[in-house]
Length: 117
Image (cartoon, rainbow, N blue to C red):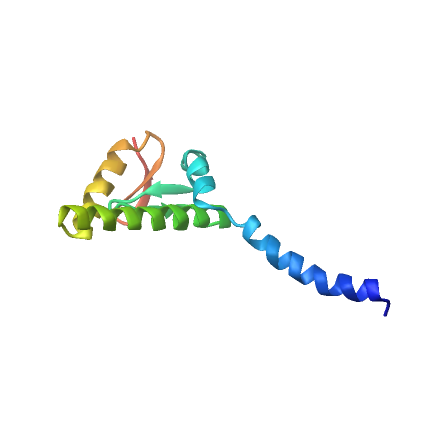
């Protein structure tokens, strides 16, 4: 095998591995696409203060995970700052999120995804 071919064969997997993080969605991208994902019916708000995937696909799941991780961290910070239980912060946030959800977007009620009137 020629030297250039060997080098290419060694470099291609390394370059591919380095490009994977670029392909993944980050929190900023998730936040930027959240409104569109809600409008398309891919994600919705839940009473527990977190997003849920209405339609399970890679983009919806990424958005839900990234934003929920950020929300979980913020809820923990607020709970500690105010000396209250995280569950109380989650419940308050969930109530506000459902109240603020636009008509026609999905919310989880009694275990079922429904469009908010």
